[in-house]
Length: 71
Image (cartoon, rainbow, N blue to C red; front, side):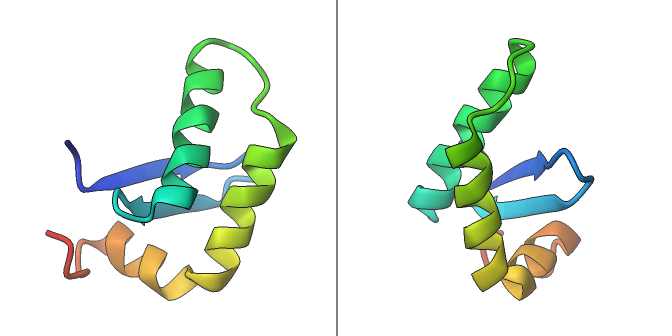
C-alpha cells in the first residue's frame, strides 16, 4: 500500500495525506475514484478534504516534499 495519497482539487490545490489519516484518505479515495470514472466528486468529499487540509497544511506540505516521517 502506498504511504501517501495525492489529490488535486478543482481549484488546483494539491493535498497529500499519509494513508493512516483514515478520515481524509477515505474521502480522497472516493474523490479519486469519481474523477477516474469521469464523475463529479461528491461535495461532502471535497469539503472533508478541504477541512482536513485546513488543519494539516504543514503535514501535507512535508508529505508532498518527501520530508515527512512516513517514509
